[in-house]
Length: 240
Image: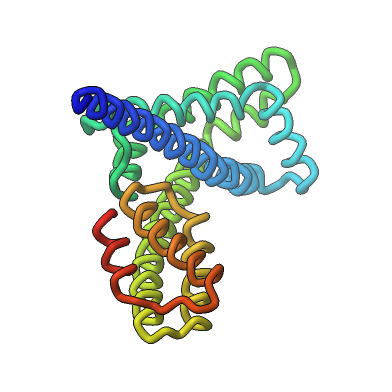
C-alpha cells in the first residue's frame, strides 16, 4: 500500500511539473511574442521613414499574411527548445526569471527571426506583393529591427524581475498586516500581489507562497470571527 501511495505521489508530481512547464512555455510564447511583434512595428517605421503610416501598416500586414507571424512563433519555439537543451533544462520547469531569459539568449532567437524575415520577404517579392525596393530596404535595415527585438525582450524580462521583487515585498507586508490583524491593509497587499502575478512567468516557489496567502485570505474573508492565530501562518509556511 505504501509503495502504491508513493507511486501515486510521484505521478502527481510529474503531472504537475509537466503542467507547469506547459504554462511557462505558453506564457513565454505569448509575452515574448508580443514584445517581438511590437519591436517589428517600431523597426519597420524606422526602416521605412519615407513611407506614411498606412503604407507601413500595409507592409506589416503583407508580412503577416505571408507567414511572418508563423515564422516568429516557430523561431521562438525553437529558441526555447534549443536554449533549454543548452542549459540542461529540458523537461524541467524554470525556477527563476533569469533561467528563462538565459534560455532565450542561448536559443538563437535573433538568427531564427532573421531567417524567417528573409524567407517571407523572398516569397512576397517573387509574387510581386512587396516591391523590390521595400524588400531591399527591410533586408538592409534588418539589424535595426533585430536590435529592437533584443531591446524589447530585455525590457520584458527586466519588468518581470521587478514584478517578482514587488511580489516578495508585498508578501512580507501581507504577513506584517496579518500579525497586526489589520484586514484593510492585508487586503490591499493581497490585491497588489494578485495584480503582479498576472505579469510574470509562473514560478513554483512564488505560486506556492501566493497560494498560502490566497488560502488564508479566503479564510479571513469567509470567517467574521477569524482569530488571526500565528498557528495558521506558521502551518501555511510549513506546507510550502
